[in-house]
Amino acid sequence: MFKIPEPDLQIAFFTRLQELRRTHLRDALLDTVASMEIPLLDEQLASLVAAKDLRTVAAWGLRGEIIFAVPALLERNPLLLGYYRLLLGFSQKQFYGNRYEFAPFKIMEEHGRIPANRTHDLRELCAALCVSAGHLINNVDRLSIENVHELTLLTLGPQLRGGALNALGSKATRKVFDLISDLLASETVAEGERSLEIQNASGRLVRIEFASDPDICIREELPSGRYRNLVAIEIKGGRDHSNIHNRIGEAEKSHQKARKDGYVECWTMVGVARLDVDLAKRESPCTDRFYHIDHLTRPDSEEHLDFRENLLSRIGIKA
Image (cartoon, rainbow, N blue to C red):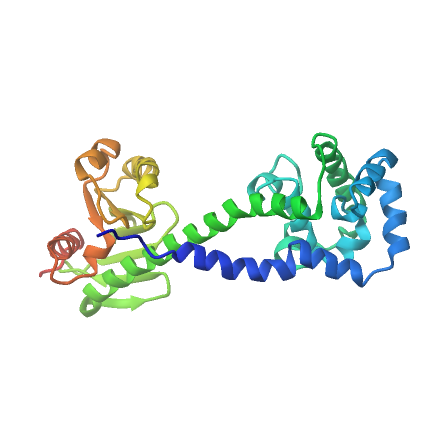
């Protein structure tokens, strides 16, 4: 009697989590420490961390580097910058944003490389991390190795979800783009990975391309060489119904900008199974047409036929 969606995100999370255990989480830290000279770590910990803070974590049964970053450790395994960021509760956007000036070090977490000519800055980076870690240990009752791991996972969860949703959105955009490519195959004169060029009935070129804002744009080249903006398409491929109204709001902001840029029509495509179109129209008055992505991919559906008819009409191609 009841139907529950397949746990696709959780399956993806599990696979990614297994990878991160070996590269960015507790297991990666412990494996790296096992290959290092402990006196060197102790020397750097003593120079960067207040003695009382080291005594605190020692009383909890933890070695200092479980909480505090030191240059030798990051030099041996630059990926572990991600471990300390996660432990301290910073998102990538926050930590590597303009506010903290850590953007050059993002390559450490993502690619395991210290940025060129920045090795000498590792000590200052670690000093800043140690100050933040000091605030952490002085404002909790006690930490165990399990608690530390749990704190990193709490920060990692939203990061994984955001990445998975972005990937889902990219997949939905590609699905729509491929559908457009199939519908216009006979009129296509040039095709790239992210763009199509169509010759319409008037002999003018129409360019269809991936973009970031809007997701897909359709523009007609005029005799002057300028472009006439025809259709802006926003694609919200997530299937989480509880979040769809936020996503519709995001589409509206994009469409408002598209209107200012002269786009004649704005379309919004969604991945949720059931959409209250009347409510969606109130939330995004700039949207001229709403489409369900799954319906579009069924050639016999009314939405597919409506989309095809309007697409050909806007581009200027005879059915």
